[in-house]
Image (cartoon, rainbow, N blue to C red; front, side, top):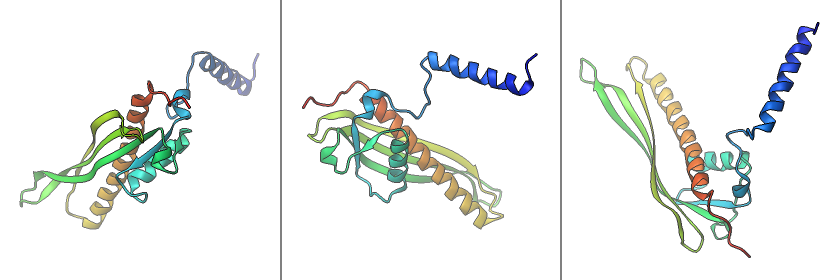
Length: 174
């Protein structure tokens, strides 16, 4: 009879062996065809949270950020990046108590020579939140946290969309 501690290890080893043979890979991992291609981002400052999040996600996934846009295989040109806040509902006294928060990102991808690899696209991340107005400081912090999470999600979506669009592109032969 197998000891329960060893039985758990056997199940774990079996699962690992099964996933190795089926081509399973983690979601954040870049395809081999894209790992060699460097990316650059223009249109926003390097201190912008979207830029910082994008670079972090690209690096973690095994991608390369070009030192200069002219050295990159593809340049992500951010045309517009905006946070929007719109009231949805009003309380009995006429104050807005539910808001629609949006992060709008318009971008295109091109080569350093100006060839368009991906035409202008719009990426929108939306959240709704309820504000009771009973704790304004707490609500402000909550809204700030939601905005940070939206920028993080926008960076993830941007990376996925760019990588999907570049999958079929290959670097120019030297």
